[in-house]
Length: 168
Length: 151
Image (cartoon, rainbow over the protein chains, first blue to last red):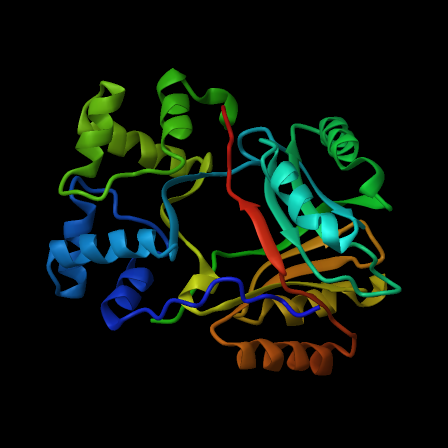
């Protein structure tokens, strides 16, 4: 199955691109952050704000706000739950499971048979593994008979963690 | 870290996971909603970033909508070679996150490139430089991405 490039890539104009590069590691912590970015880029604050509003409308910016560190907040266990479910039920299941508050990422991904039979991924966060396992049982109950097998993969070590970056 | 947060810190983390305004004085606007001074809000966010409760403050970008390609890639690496391969993978700027996981497929990373061609080239380079096959798992569909943490 081909990855559906679901949404057409929005082409960023040069100003948007500069805004992305200037803000991808964060907004300046000053009373007028958009003005500070404008000054840095040599454009007006209005241009920065219009550009960012447009990027929210087109979905290029998912949201603006704080990104909490799960681990620091006590959510020390994260389990990648992976499921083998029938392809024709996955959209319905995705909506249900994606709505659960303890799931942070929920995707349909390709199988790699025979090694990897799983096509549905839900990242589950809990304070400990017992909590993660309870959440996964809850997902299993919701999936019901469509669950042809599942596993939880825990991360044992962070090998690298950087934000996503686009070049300047 | 999380344990030393007071009520105001919690209110900031809970209420600011999206919807930070785009206007001339956004901190003043949010501070008004929380009933605190603009500078207090700025200082609190600064402190929460410094002590690691927040990993970032600002816009969260959607890579694919910028034309980029994101993929989750898994590999099966023998223990004896694990550190060496991790070094090769981590050195690539296209690799954003890399995790060891307790499975036969024991290395999982996110590959981010600006184009499909670069994606294919990066996969090829990884297989050539490490000698192990990649299991490329680009998303076919996304149902949810986000955080709904209440602290």
